[in-house]
Length: 212
Image 1 (cartoon, rainbow, N blue to C red):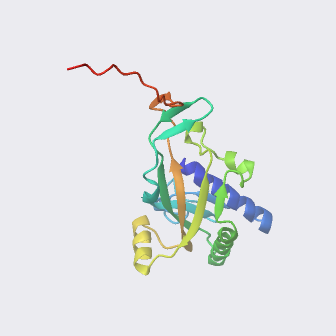
Image 2 (spheres, rainbow, N blue to C red):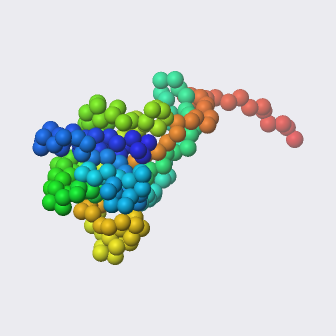
């Protein structure tokens, strides 16, 4: 579900860069900069050059949404299903430009920043149908259903920047960090089910008090 959610955003960005600037794909993709960049001593799985790469660098639980009810009421069938509440996660997303030409890297990074400036929320009904299906996971259980993904700029300190690129083991690229919040992760499995209480009887019969 994490990969599908980010793939949808990448598809939307690529469509925007293609339609607004006439740029030819591939323009953006998911990747792991820890594997290196192609042509720069990277491994076989290195991220290719001349793209905008998205990488998850941190995950945190959204604690304010932790205590949700564990039952779902269905007023049509008059049944209630019991299941564990979903996990809501916030992600720190690294967005970096791997272009060989430094000016092109800054150009594509600025276009990406402007994209998120006017389009910082993505919902199931607001994205193109092709964005939902292109490069989507084959198993439907790995796909997101309804979602609302909000992107916010994150401004790291110089120390955080140093730790980030030191962890990735590579040279620093033109980049930005975004906070993606929140993504709901849930495996839909009903643990128990029961009927709803629809009426409470108020007339009870009781035996007469036994005489002493």
